[in-house]
Length: 291
Image (cartoon, rainbow, N blue to C red; front, side, top):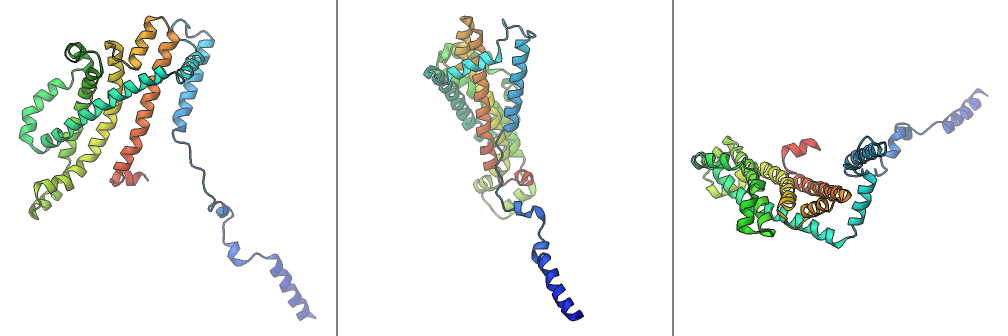
């Protein structure tokens, strides 16, 4: 009798028990196989912008901010939305962006080879250092009257000024990058008889690339600021000229709407350059450590 009870009790106990393999799986492991929904890029930045606009709207409605000087945020957003359907607005955006990027490309094309040469040839760098330090602090906008007299009011003048503003930023970063070469690695290549051109391609350029890419990304924002400022002061076609026209016509909402468009354009330029920078420097130790 006891054996029968024992044999019948054991199967019952086994039926209520979990298999050994399943007992070792954590309860939350079923979610591990599920695909996570990717986070929305820039959601924190968008949230901060939304909060700022809500606060400005509240200050305008309550009268803390005078509507004579600060239109309601809702009015500015409504005007900005109407601009998105205007072909002339997109032409102005294209003019500002084209002038900024063309100047950036021209300045970078001059700054990179010149910076690498000055960074690798100390004697040349010492000879040109006083000239660079004298010209670099001069604001590009201060040269606007001279540029208008020589290049006129048009694409050429704006590109010249944006190119100058980009030149100095990229040049200084490139010189620093050319000096950041590991001396031990360089001496090793020299001892193995590696030619100078090969050393430049395999050692100097990879060492200077993080400095160059960072300089170009910063110079892109500066070039856009200079382009819009030149358009505002010099009458070159673009968003700056639209801001000036709205100001002269007493259209305060339009002034803020075009200013908002300029800020959004700057954000887009930065968002475009950041992933490019990450991709070009994916091999760098700083990017691998951040993953």
